[in-house]
Image (cartoon, rainbow, N blue to C red; front, side, top):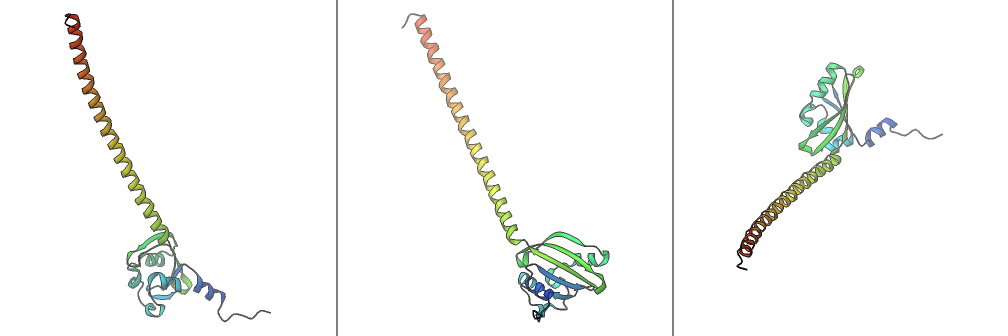
Length: 169
């Protein structure tokens, strides 16, 4: 029979989950964070234990709302500029333990890619507008020159016709 590991499966999952996990009590004091949360927010669990969630997150309104309403907030996106971090959160109550937990999926890489694509699109649209404007300008210049030469040709041909009619030529 295999030996029971010293850590429970849940503890191992907690340690290896790539998502940031934070648990706060009903006073919004931090009770637990996992290593991924520590990496995402550049904090050590020992230093933040017992502190108000706002000391790291700057806004703990979602935790308060979840505690008061006893409802889950699903897939809410959030930005933490101090940590150069973009996340999708699920915040849920654990009533029998008087806790609120939050799972944060790091979307920073996808967000940056999206920003780059938006930038490329804006640049492409600007270039397209520039090309169209230049083409219109060239077409107008050509039309102007063509109009001038057509007018000059008409004047010269009318003079020539007049000279032929008068027998000068």
